[in-house]
Image (tube, rainbow, N blue to C red):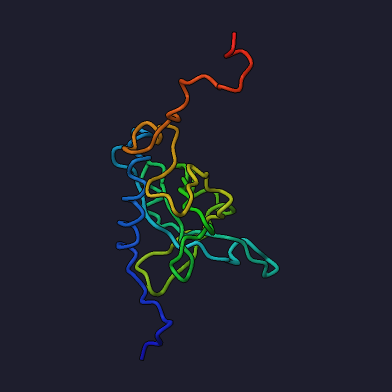
Length: 170
């Protein structure tokens, strides 16, 4: 029986589709026609610790790491909320053709529930591409002010002289 406070977990493909549509204007601005993108769970893992300390981690499948492309992601927490409070953050894991030979950076996590192991990566190893306010309808970019209908880049009064400026009386 579900408690009224229980949130029904959405499938990762549903979260990915929602997140990707938000970032689509930014991908267009960056000239990325078909970026490798997926929503990912960010969790406090012990994979990089010998003493049980935890740090923010993200897991990737071998196919994602071997794709030959940078991987873009927006992260969520266990409750499927945006990982970064009050912001939507787009991250990039830069393609590394030598990832298999760097076990200190890509820690294999065997799984009995998945057909393949996954590889944990520190959140600090991901590059922040964009950080937008959680209330934004589209990502905030340098071109946003010019491309979003209804957003003005200047005030209606920009062309007027300041009536209280002494130079306007000359």
